[in-house]
Image 1 (cartoon, rainbow, N blue to C red):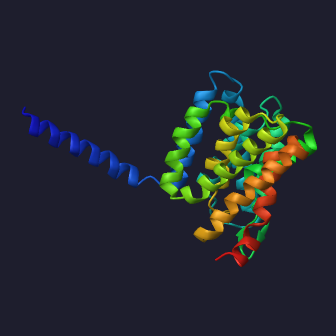
Image 2: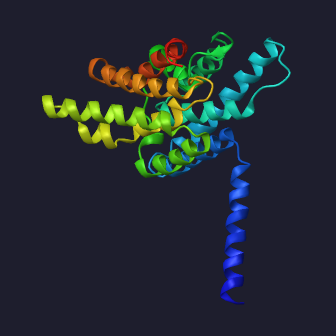
Image 3: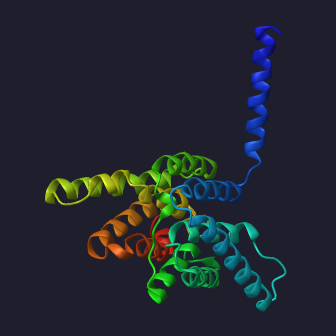
Length: 261
């Protein structure tokens, strides 16, 4: 087999991979990425091997029950899977009761709408409910290894074409962290600038399609606003910085869209 033939086969193989990848939806890519994060982080946190299936089962059961009560013929299994995986990757995995509360709150939060649009990120609403009502915490085990978060997150952002949302969020948060460190010499710059939680939030939470703004300019403003809110809460009430900051940002989505077209 000659060099030209081998090169042709390589191009054909790459074209086949590209074609298959193009058929993967953003929801499917999110499920694959989050599942890989569960697998990768389970080496250090084997509790994920139990908490992830438990969260998935809880979310599916509550989704099904709520759909039946509302006489809906279908439920979004992809959306339910994403919510369950996010709850498992964020919430402290040592409390089955907290997982159940988080799953129920996440499903119920999808019923809260304004102008026929979801307001709250379901996973964040669920985690905050579990923190408030069970005394559990948000461990963000899925963000404990930065490299997998970056690789998978970049794929998600590329697939969804939302770098204009991710980059302002990360850049704003990093800038505020560095400035605070330079001025007060007390802020943990390494944790904030290179910590996985910020990037996990950017790639897998801020990008959530049903709660992010519709227009490009509004998404840019949303990314900057979210970073400022999360950073401020990190200084004032660190325990609720990410969860509270993301939910507050969710509330501001439609007002942002009204002022920024």
